[in-house]
Image (cartoon, rainbow, N blue to C red; front, top):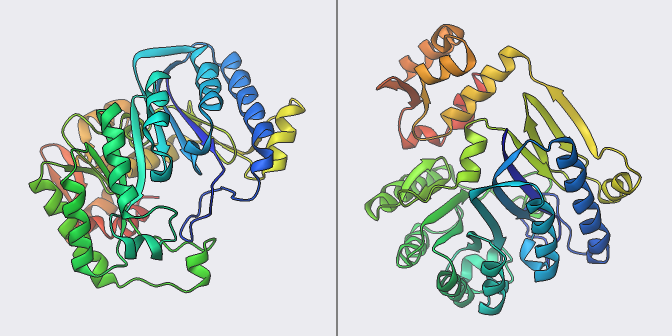
Length: 368
């Protein structure tokens, strides 16, 4: 079985006001115990799934780049005791303030193949609003440093809250660098975040204007949208992220990590002490397990496919899931075709245009 592996590192130097992921800035004293538990979970999982071939490894967080090189090497060694494909994509998220040449060289030497930089912006005013630890100079320098060691470099951008002119400038700076991938996220105000408590709000008009400009502008620079928030040069799409949208088998290891294997969804506990203690006690850290029935499986696979620019190929989908998707969603599809939120073209069903992608949650909710 091909398997895509996510590793969660739940530690940060500082919790960002927009971050809703499970991460901590004041519990670094627990890091060694956590890493020991994580390696034990890796060992336990693969001892029970020893016929898997690891296709991608993605180390995210949190801030994985706060790990020392020997700590990171130890995690990779635990994974590489198992079967790993020859062209395995190994990604790590790196904060710009960690992206010095010494550290990047070590990442390269330990077999990392792809770096995702949390730049978020090249504008000091925006970075200060986002309460980031780095400044615009470090954003630029981190990209230049990383490109010295890695061909496959991605950057994160957050937008939707700034003046349009500032947004345009940010994009100009981004495309002036020879990066291969951009993950561009509209600032999300989640209930668990500081921004939500501050009652930060976005202008829908501004968000739409920026999103449509983003898609068009990046395309003119041959950086193509392949999923709602992801853009890449041809051939540099994230293999790991595509596995999620293609409904492949993946395992999440670490605190709060999610998995999907053989039509069963799992989610680990999001309580740090509970995760560490359960692993050391030889118990399962999973807090939720759900077996997907035939109808639920079809629904989720269809929704995931619609997130991508290519949409859902009808013939391939029907063959894979032994169904007729146009009969299965007959009324919903008829309605969305009339509303022109979805279209059928060249044998595929897809969201009609970039503007409709902005209301993708509304469209996709109709198929749950």
